[in-house]
Image (cartoon, rainbow, N blue to C red; front, top):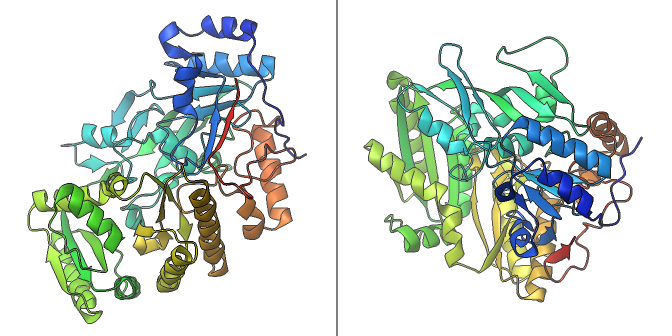
Length: 489
């Protein structure tokens, strides 16, 4: 049975707000329009909707009570973490209640002997990394936004990051979840023991973008720190030369811990912001890291240097100290922060292509930018073909909005044509629903819809996300010429 989504904006009643006020203290409940406007969008600023109310639970019981109350009053609700998501995954389509999890940020347990931790969903990713320092263990998924994004949000979108080329994405490191289902029932999926018998419901939940329920606890697998690192920066005259080097490195059977590319536009912004000493005339730079046993990493490093030189690298710099290594990673992790120097607004796409198709898709991105008169810069996870073209614009200019959307759609369509996908880690959200029938058959989509209906039969939880649904709330961006904004008050 297909999920239906609300076609009109429900409004919260005074009775509902009064009941909600019995669950939350005033500082954990936002109702005024000037406060709610802050939550009108996530990192995808092209679509904006204002929730009716925002709550900040600090306990699982509060989430259960809130969900049951929404069911009683037939109101939609959507979970939200730090709002760093980039596809409108936390957009409050249809208004209703936004359940903001950032105040549930405790590390509940670290079990070094069994190699796992239990954390609350609002824990900032990097805070777990910091807590594990000195233990010899780490949590491998490291999104570029890890200084702000939450682990609950990482679970929702199955986030990646620079080091997931070797270590895998979020789903490979989540072994259990405590979840409040859309009817208010509390269940546990998986747990501290890996490979439990039966269906992998934990793996099914990860990446469901908040449409299956709300995670309240997460069991994450901890990984032993490697003995040694070797970190390099390859400087290339052209993007094509850099991407050909990437293909050759993987083709030689070397799987770096990370293999990131930044083009001239990103390098220039970083240099202006942070003065790292990058060559401003380079067409592209590759940030490459290998890790493992001390006896093996030097050989891999030298092979990579030889490959880069064979593809015309101007130079390959090495980080000779931990401080130099951290400086190189700082430049990569702060790349998006530096983009603000290039334009007032930007939209980051998240396509995937086979690695051998990187030169072709990057050439197409350049052509799309020229065709629509939009400047596009690139910083991405080159090792697994996960591209992140950044389209620069001014959201106050309606014509630029239209051209950005058209260019972005062309790029994602080209990714599909090249045998890839429209997302590697940012998710579908509301932005990419219109591409789902290009990626999947009707039968595929019907099966996905039926599976979601098992968890979320009314579609009340995170409505109009991921899958095309009957009665969707008009999220298609046809002929849009300004940021979509609809107040649900």
